[in-house]
Length: 229
Ligand SMILES: [Zn+2]
Image (cartoon, rainbow, N blue to C red):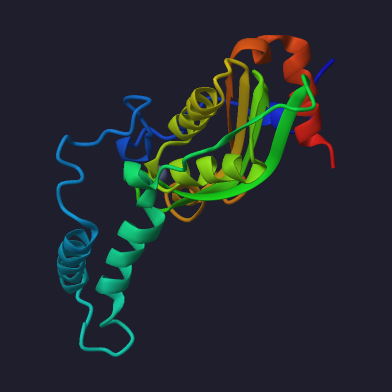
């Protein structure tokens, strides 16, 4: 039987354009970070980004004496470090407390429609969408809000959708000591919608399935639940 909905959207990210600028290659599951990534503290990072963003605006010819513009470099710098890229820093990784699975619930647990906002690492413009996470408990469970926090942590980085999907899946495995995890992400890429090919309707689907989720029946149960209203 053919699946309807999200499962049909799952396709590899493939550039439809010969233009290299529109290609979205990605190199590894780990976010590529330098070894000295956190030697500067947040305040120093904000100061430096502010300075450089001022320079970008100057080069673009904007008048930074204008009341509306003069606060922008500082605002952007704070937003980068404290908000939209705060998931780069391991100190912000959510620590998930485990609980005993008292009810011996041994079926699939699904947390669907987790809204996230991320940024494409190739253009630094938003990627936003829904993440759906499922797992089978290995005797332990976490609070449902923690699944949401894990999604937000990895979303708040310059990202590639495939990497975001795998990073969430691996983290759920690690935190819950389970090898049975499914993650599906359905997202919009502003770099595709607002520039480049200018396609405002296309969505990109990615998935991560481990253990039991590689079984077609289990996978279908998960995808059916995601697609149900
Ligand atoms: Zn992009």
